[in-house]
Image (cartoon, rainbow, N blue to C red):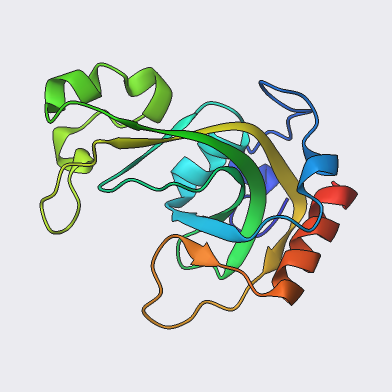
Length: 161
């Protein structure tokens, strides 16, 4: 699978989850990526995590690259199908931990102390056999916009898997 998400890390290579094969749908169309911590990237790509918790809405719908924070690489793709605003209540959000895997109230807060109450809803994960690099602009935050060349490389990685 790759350096950070290799087989030695217990990363499963799913056939696909919830919605079948997305590899044909994503060819050339992965324009954005989301940066997530390694353990959450693994969980998204093996289908255990369907909500990525954030402090703000995102209107994008369609495939997104899943980037491990600090790696400079896209490890797979998933389809973003919705953005759900949850109540401003830690207990309510923690009750949905089966979808987002966050179990600590402290982890529901950004570095600035804002509550991560927007669930970016993901489905149909597709892990790549080998991660594909992208150019991370200094100071860039999620979502990342991929260049046309990066979009082609991501589409190729998805087709090969």
